[in-house]
Amino acid sequence: MARQRLAQLPIPPFSRDFGDGGDAQTWLQPVGISAHDPADEDQMPLAGGPYGFSAVDVINAIGTAITVTRISASDVVAEAAKGGDDAESRTRRFLHRLTRPRKPYAGLLMNQWHVMGIINTTPDSFSDGGDHFAAETALASAQTMVEDGAAILDIGGESTRPGAEPVGHDEECRRILPVIEQLSIEGHIVSADTRHSPVMDKALDHGAQIINDVGGLRAEGAVALLAKRQAPAMIMHMQGEPGTMQKDPRYRDAPTDIFDWLEERINTAVAAGIPRAMLAIDPGFGFGKTPQHNMEILQSIGLYHGLGVPIVLGVSRKSTIAHFSKGEAAKDRLAGSLALAALARTQGVQIFRVHDVAETMQALQNTEAQAMAFAGE
Image 1 (cartoon, one colour):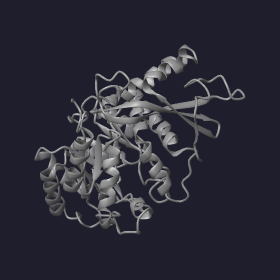
Image 2 (cartoon, helix red, strand yellow; image 1 turned 90 degrees about the vertical axis):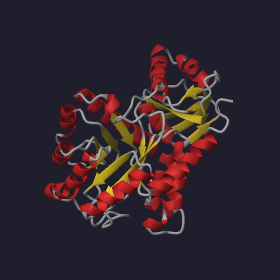
Image 3 (spheres, helix red, strand yellow; image 1 turned 180 degrees about the vertical axis):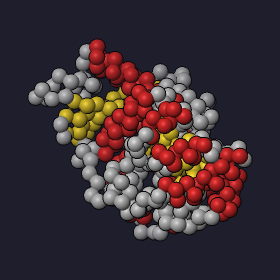
């Protein structure tokens, strides 16, 4: 559904007393993002990082209608107050989550960006299937990624490419546990890319510090397990399952639908005893989305700072890049991968899940240098 951009606010933000008795939903997306200047009273800090925002897009949903109105960041609370005390307090809470500094995640500072290297110990992943199937090859690639600057090594043993079939838990463990254990012994931060609770448990036993779950902690026992183990988790959105997720995915409005889904998963995890500081989210670029949905999500990626946790993004070598280009094969999508990662960093994304670590490091280092060229002057 297309959004309608309005010149003036149709209602006070977060008001619920209009529209034939129906409730409205409202979200705030930071825009006008640039290097944060603490002396600029018209700018707010973005997630405690080096960027700030001077305006917000007030996104309102009334039934199936989506409207967007831009307003200066310094005026948004006053506008919300016109809707009453409840509207004002909810607006302040949303702004607090947008602006507050993030606590360290898995020991990594979140006021800067980090690269997460992908190592799929599978024969059939969409891009690197077979490249790291042998443990020795996976470990050698991991060492190269660390030397190139990767802060996290993400080890997966089940392909989640569109149409992929599930892998048995024993086979998944056979593929990933030796690699996780050795990398952990060497002192690296390792994440286990799995959506299965028994595999999560064993991966943690073998030294994984993070669980990266493309299923969003929906597997039976996943939330309870991570609450018990007090392990950091990455919660990703996926519509459907890998085998079916690309069969006509639909949304009312992809960015806000996914925001609400992720918020529910965060609330469930926190209620079960997982501290918010141990959670990060991934909007799931390419997982149950059309190429257009993916680009809408990327254009709105700053919205997800409103969840109050770090943002993880995986655009590396995704088919959407080829869709908007010349249909290139996965390993020929580096330029598009770097372009999308750089654009996301200018909206404050903190963690980038990539295949090409050295190239991504170079791209993001230069993106940040350009964005901060006049900071502090």
